[in-house]
Length: 202
Image (cartoon, rainbow, N blue to C red; front, side, top):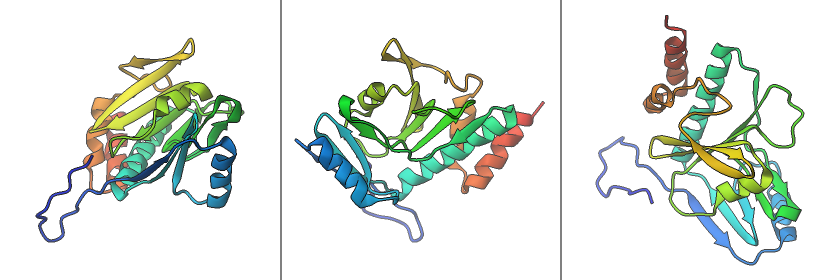
């Protein structure tokens, strides 16, 4: 859980927690009804696994981190000539597998005719919630990143199970030690400009 200070200097930003509710014994049809009621809006985010339904409204800080990460991944792909397309919070679901969720960001590399993204990114801003990695495994998403406390953990699917990797399989040349400090830049454009300069540096 994110700790919120009791004394804050004027003008200082206070980190906020995600708002999350988990409902139990929810039929799959009710999950689909929630998706229909929400429509095309980005929130709340819905995750379903084996009868549990998580309804989550991300905080400002959650959204900031996921947006910065997305722009930096796209900047890396641009500079390295990698064919990559973003699909945002694509709703991934499979009723027979009792699994459905929406990544913070996701991407397809190369041929775009896929049923699931090659790479999904999740920001863990507030502790708790459901086993999203199991949901991704059932949906057979090849690679998932979890960002938490300024660290990215890479999970690559192999033989129907995820292995933890030090580097991305989709983007093996991407150095997280170079990218992650840029999340502290005041604006996303400053982060992108700095990253592109570092990538093109001789």
